[in-house]
Image 1 (spheres, rainbow, N blue to C red):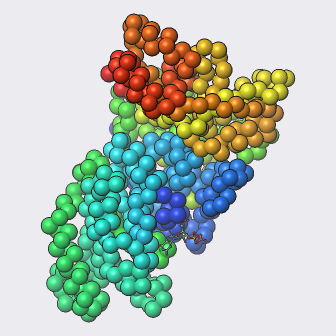
Image 2 (cartoon, rainbow, N blue to C red):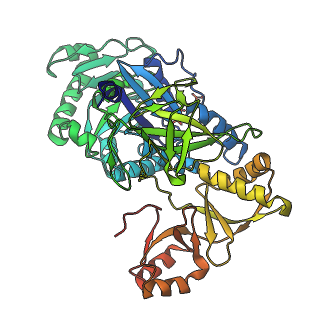
Length: 532
Ligand code: G4P
């Protein structure tokens, strides 16, 4: 085991920020980059979200696609660590993108708006993190505004998100009365030092909460409230335990205001202390450890070139083990194909550059003309596939037809490549070979139509079909029970891109009835499941 590789692994922290739109993800990202010296001024990270009111405009998605290449991976150095932030769109039409990105992070920061509390997208994304035991830090943002009581919010986080929290900081006042933050973890107080609440003072060390200095700093009333609250915290919440956090069993909570730069440095300092370095990952044959000399990694995102004339794409690969080297031969396991990359990209805050070497935890961008598919594994030669990069059931379904018979080939190729990119999922009906597109957001249909025409010169039309959910089928295909199921449901059976059998159910009632009638035919809402 080389010591250089170990040093590089120990330096790296790769994480995502998850939040409901508008909670402050972009603002927080920007402040983190400012601390890392990666950008010089606020506003440098392009706004990567869909503006309110523009959601019916699919060109907005195209705009988003352009910007999200730039913000896909933001890297910076801080106190000797290399930090990689992976972009996770909060908009629900991009939920699948975010789920996939969560397969490539080693931890996350959850941002919650103090006034709005736990919102819908946060619930969904945290659930995915919980399923995978991803370590989570919670940042409650916008304390400069009137919001919910800190303890009510902690309750809400526990109940709605199913987390076990331990506050590591506490706000002193809120909204117009917001004075600062008591940092439980580092035992200090930070206060605003000007009337306009723009400037934050140095941290003042407080060894003992009964120190009368607190009264002088924030006034007797706030000091007394703070002492009561700290007492309550000690009696109600568990003590912070890093192992429990890393296992995903305990989530520390910080309060602050990203906009005013309050509590952000504390969050970052705690993050570099607690957050795990690159973690081992499971494959279909064994668990791969980062410190193994041989390179391995997987594709979690594919971006098509914005210029339709150039059919090249950028595949984002998370390095799991070993050193990735430029111009070295690697194996694309699914195709059993050797590949060499002459210009792999590394990402920084505002640019990408060709690199010679990358290490576990890093993301490399590989140029490709259509070989990669999301979930693909690359290795130094070993035949194994990383698991845990599933598809989820889409929410919207339509038949897709060829609208220009002379362009059938282009249409097939276009659909194929867009599906590899993960824009949508394709299902082929068992009975007659008709093709169905499934998407998370309704907007994706327009995007597909537009991109097929502009990038592949093909035309498509859609036809409605009533499907509630795609259920991946797990069954003994030789059993009588399965044969009966297949006969009865033949009009609703299809294959996904990996040739897995899928039951396209028209209602939740149908799913319940089918499960009752065929208890040994298991239906899953996710394409990857442990065979029972
Ligand atoms: P997002 O990426 O999670 O969608 O949120 P973003 O950071 O874009 O923040 C959403 C809005 O909330 C922005 O205002 C931003 O300025 C504001 N905001 C973020 N953090 C804080 C905070 O700590 N306190 C207060 N008061 N506001 C905060 P906007 O008016 O929607 O956008 P903009 O025109 O300022 O960009």
